[in-house]
Structures are given as C-alpha cells and as structure tokens.
Length: 345
Image 1: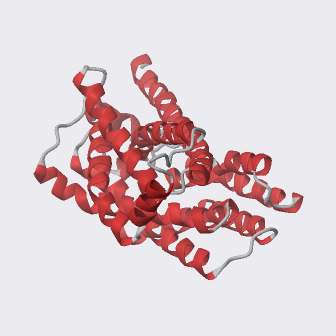
Image 2 (image 1 turned 120 degrees about the horizontal axis):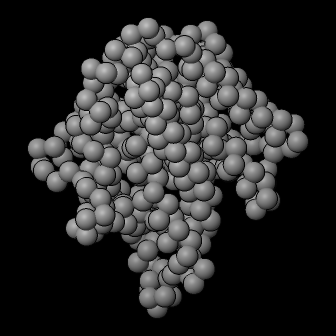
C-alpha cells in the first residue's frame, strides 16, 4: 500500500514544479520581451533569435549527454508542422499585440482564452462539459480581467484587430498543441526541438511579409552596422534564455495538466506581470482596476478547487495497470483519473 500512495505524491510534486516553472517563466518573459522590444524594435528577428537559442540549445545539450531528445525525422516533422504553424501564428500575433497595445489589453484578451479553450475541449475533443463551479470560475476570471482593463485602457482599431487575431490563434494553439503532444509520442525535449526548429524555418517568410527586413537593413545602413544598443544585448539574451526555458516548461506542463488548466495557469501568472507593469511603466490601472485583477486571481483559485475533487474509485487500479514510462502520453481522461494531477494548477 505504501508504494501505491507514494507514486501519486511524487506525481503531485512533479506537476507542481512544472506548473510553477511555467508560471514564473511566462510572467518574467512577458516583461523581458516588453523591455527587449523597446530596445530592439524588431519583434520578428527577436522571436527568430529565441527559436535559434532553443533549437540549438537542445541539440548541443543533447550532444553532450545532458538531455535526451527524439531525433529529427521528416515524417514526424510533417505531422508536427500544422501545430508549429499555429504556434508561430500565436507568437506572431502576440508580439504585434504588445507592439500596438499596452500590457492591460494583452491581459484581458489572454484572460478570455480559458473559457474558449474549455468550450473547444468540449466540442472538438469530446471532453466532459465543465461543471457549474468550473464555468463560474472561468467567468470570474473573464469578468475580473474585463473590469481591470475597462478602468485604464482604450482600444484602437489596429490594437483591437491584433487582439482578436491573437485570441483566435492562442485558443487554437492551446487546444491543438495539447492534442499534438498527446498523440505524437515525442518526449518533452523532442517537442521543444521540433517546435522551435520548424518555427525558425517559417520566420523568414513572415520577416518578408511584414517588411521588417527593410527596417533591419535601413538600421544597419543608418548606424554603420552598429544597430544593437549595449543595453539591448542583455535584454535580448535574457529573452532568448527564458524563451528556451518556457519551451521546456510549457510543453511539460501541457503534458501534465488539461488544456484548460494550462491556460488558466497562464492567465493567473499574469498577476506578477501586472505588478511589475505597475512598477516600471507609466500607464497602469487604477486601484479599482487592481481590485478587479484580484477577482481574476480568485477565479483561478476557484478553478483549482473545482477540478480537485475526490478521485474515482478505480483510480488506483488504473494507476497500477499503466506503465510509468508512458504516463506523459495518456489521454486527458486518463490524466483526470490520477490523484493530484490537477492539484497544482
């Protein structure tokens, strides 16, 4: 009996570590990227450097034996390509949203995603309908974020267009990437390699379509080749480092929790982002707006309580019959049978 109880406890702490790691990286990366873009105003090139760092980092660390990743194969790459396209579009629209709008606008549209992901999970992936408590928690998250932004932000047509495009792509990414993770059989580092390498291959296409290459070449000519400010170097370096870390924690957390729980984690960790935003930027919400943000955070806590119920009677038997090496590749309905699987979200 002791062995049976130990494994769920170990799984609980492993899941907790992954979700906390993702939350910290996500919160800090948003602030670091915002600062990096102000000093290195080439979002397409910045994300491309992140892809290079992540893909090269996995390959180099794999060569030295520090980690194991699945080998890059064309047939698997072809299957993974649609997910990589969705991921790239999510990053692309996110970057342009931050470029044309403030952090508050980004947060409110980011906060809409858990509700849409829950609906998409139910409609397209045949997941059980959210309970009334879960649905209420998602509405609290949405209502708190809307109230927060309504106190301080004004939408422009350009910003609103990018925000809507981001909302569509990030919702698709959250659901589709989860499906891809659960069915391709790649390990976490393999997912990081495929995702970033394929995204890097797409970067030049969008670099040309957006005309950013003209800006880069014009800056090179105007500054005599010195277009990288000294203060921008550490900002871009940190952005690439945290891009690499969030690639790992993001995919690992996706495997450990449901798509909706993963999305809610991303929304709640924006609380830290907003705190930093209040300290370093001149435009932020009123005290009433911060109270609304607390409602968003409380909605995340309520969601945690709604998905952490008593485990089914057959959870122990299900756990015993599964191979521990394949736990990451189980379907979502199997994940929900495992005690502590959602406890950390």
